[in-house]
Length: 476
Image (tube, rainbow, N blue to C red; front, side, top):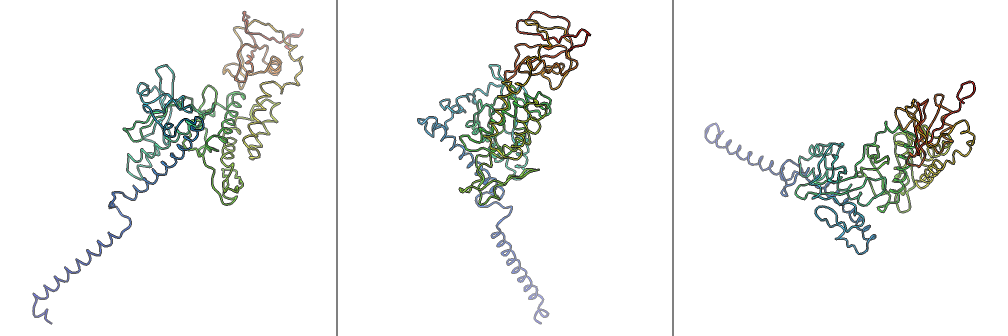
């Protein structure tokens, strides 16, 4: 062969062949890279696939906020037709204009926040951190801001590695909550006292709220029935308001006791970032299912292809399983138990609407306050007691009863001296009780029961009732 006679030609041939194959392989490789739909290399627009996902999520959150703002502005225009859409969203010094009747109370803005001092850490969650702060006037408020070390921020950083974008994404929950608090105003929703958004910092937003104490269910379970009923009544009134709000029927998707605080004995909703103002769409009844750990319910799909009433029923059943079950039946006044059991049955099976449930709760409240449930008590129940009006006992010998308004004593709510006498007669250790001007939130009296006392002193606001002693020395 020619290659055997001329080694140089053979070398040249193989060198050209190697060069040719190298060029072909490179062109094939680069062709694949150009046609590859995904990869680590940045696209001509500078975005990675991860950036696309983050941007999409930011756009979705922005659209949700815009929908809320449109609804919010429509409500404002309805309240004041002379208020233009542009004016309603104006910010002055980082806060909403006080000309807005809906937000007239939110008068703390960026300037005022600069002089506020945080005095305590109240808590933190997946998204937000809450601090207790003192106003110059001596009042205390809660400051909500984005939790930079929270779970939401951490998971976002793991997915996207974009601190600025993640902070903006996580802050949307707080922004949404502020808009909802501006619109939804009710005695059982914390009051928005102001807000500030630092435009120089992405996600730099703070909400100034009425300060409350975190709801402690264990402590609440140990409180008198009247206080537990107050919590449940406040919750029902809140759910009735949410079902008929100006935004439509509002569902609390993350319905947990931790979403509430206590303010002066009143239950108040403090977290609204997971609230939904839209009823689910449907094509058939099976699309309108409510799934709970132990129960499921199916509502009808309306002709408008909406699961009408689903938000209301979701809220009501969550109230039943998280609050009513634990707080309502235990230690309820015996004569009110039939009404309480009826409420428990109807809410546990979702047989009644929130309107009907509220009517039932208000009926219980009326009977309890007016003493109608005590009509069958004989007037003679107090005849076994000597009454000393204008006197107060001192150096008392206390005994403990449960549940009491006083930990180291026996202080109970009563409608009248007749009910107090009935209670004292049922306690073997009770020899006397006293009534004064102290009242509960229902207007009922607080009676102090004791097993003895040293002596009496004058007190125009007090009356002491002592059990009479038989001739044999036994207490009647």
